[in-house]
Image 1 (cartoon, helix red, strand yellow):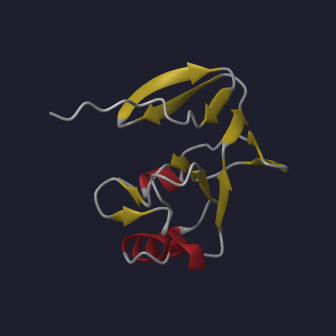
Image 2: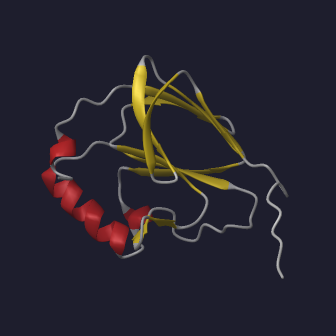
Length: 130
């Protein structure tokens, strides 16, 4: 359950993006290209698919009461009012952590080791309409 994740060990990661550089142990760290995370959770309210930016969203570890408030704000499109929420709009980011760790890309979970480089590739998707 989501409450069990509050007790999982959290390992420090180094996050670097557009002059932001911080070592932290987040409960949640996600890179969004739209405002929604999953179906109806708004992790980056106002984010736009076509603005050329990614939204790097981080949530600090919280206790059970913070988790309840976080859930409420996440589904009411008001997460930017959460004290432990940080959002950086960027074209690229580097996330570094020691050892192997679990990541998820487009809903697929897998183990990863080494730095995670994230960036925008303008005009790299071609769509054919008939």
